[in-house]
Image 1 (spheres, helix red, strand yellow):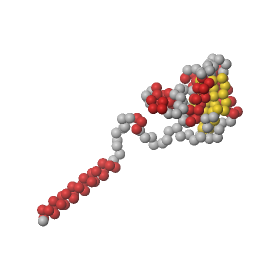
Image 2 (cartoon, one colour):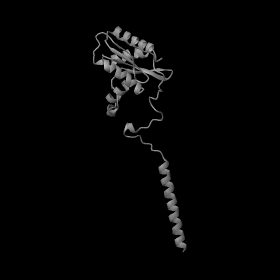
Image 3 (cartoon, helix red, strand yellow):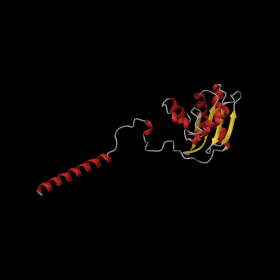
Image 4 (cartoon, helix red, strand yellow):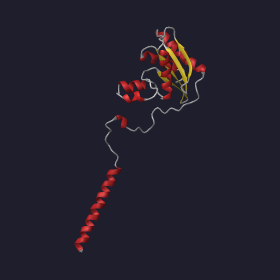
Length: 183
């Protein structure tokens, strides 16, 4: 009887030790970095700028004029579009000689910058430098520079898109236009 009692105490102690060990293993956070960068969970939501009231036609035209002034100064013929915070076209200008295919592209860049709350160069970078092909599966993405959200008082009021030059030319002109709002 004595032997059974000692054996039983040993089994109970071993089980308690095992369950304490198992519990400790379950609550210890993993320290290894995930092998897939897509598995990293950020603490805060990226690109979380809230939407605001739509940009006015007058301000949209001022942004376009600033983009056109930059393009003219550099000798570039571009198409420039401004959309409101809902992605709807507010104003558009096709510079003399700008290619026809870039009309729709400038609008697409402006819309994508508003819908995704980020500059379109982010998509280009993701595909070109990070091999993030999944970007190509997202609706209405355009992975080309030249689309920039217009942010006033911390809220997106619209977006500007430029097209007709190289991506870097489009982005330079758009940055000038966005500068009328983004300060």
